[in-house]
Image (cartoon, rainbow, N blue to C red; front, side, top):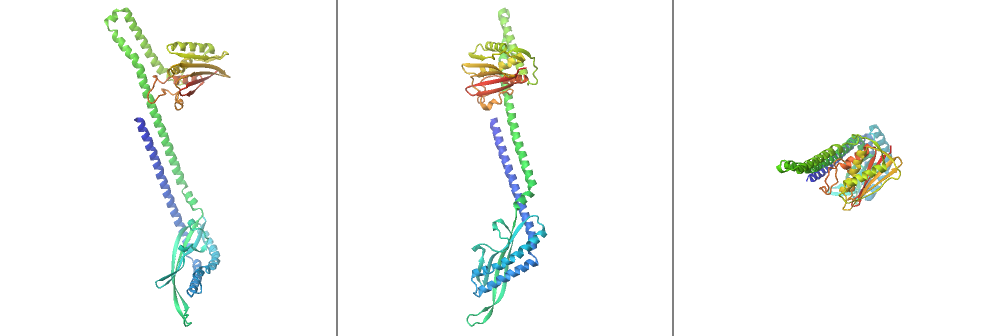
Length: 467
């Protein structure tokens, strides 16, 4: 249930982090849009002041008069509708060179700090005669009619203004019936549009937002790192609590047996028959002594086997490797004589003098081999091999036990840690044996590595220096 709660907490935290990232991204995008609007607005303001000058009015008057003359010719049926535009084009092309020179000079005076392109286009030309509309040109029928500036695609630019010109132009029309002329009025509507294209405007806005963007990224990374660190600490604390609870349960189980025996024996000693029988009384005292010694050993195991390598005080002495390991093997065989174990060993042929704390190192080796017995199969096999490797001495202990899953192997030397099957320990213990063995080897400036395959076996390789 607790594991499920932690999973729910982690999932909820991840979703909250994703939501926070999405909100931050949305706010940055909104800021980008606001910056863009302000940037375009400032550019429009600067450009509009250039458009409202005498020079620009003069150019407008020239192209407007030329267009009006073409419209009059069309009305008199001297031009076709499409000729109104084609005959008008050469004039605008000739005026455009003067327009661009003037525009470039005025832009330099404004000192925008960035390059831009400008163009003026005609959107539509319509003639009105009472309620009749005669469309000479319309943007809907094709592209804009380019007047001045630099002709770039509309999708690359931003519209800054639209204008609608509506004028009445008087002209003399010829009456075809009698050849006499008469005055006529030409009602003209012209719609124009001014568009700008700021070169690299996205880069400019992003540069303006650089500090905000960097701060947001750093803040997001900090939150992500803090999040994962918190989750890591949470999982670690959960594992420490599980290990602590497991240790308490195991030590409680280990202590219950001798304490229960002591209680029974203590109660039996109050029995008059036991007190009158010297043999029974002596047997009871022997049981008390054995259980008392067992309790002392359990307490000593907890006190001594939890020491770190830097806290262990070594009493080193010189030992011959062949003699030492022969004694270790024989002593271990006696300690497990009730178990059916096939014990094989290969000792280094050449004698090597080792400098070790004999008692502590022997305890470490016993812990590893006892582990092989605990987690062994029905037909247990233990193989011990020693070998000199230049200035180091290697001890290999291999068994044919149930093995250790790969995901558990990096935790095997941790204090109180014990490999589990599901949520239940199949073998009772305190989880200190391999931790203690590792600390003793490290205190000898050596190393211990693990190789294990589930359902095949485990190999411990101990390497210590030859002094």
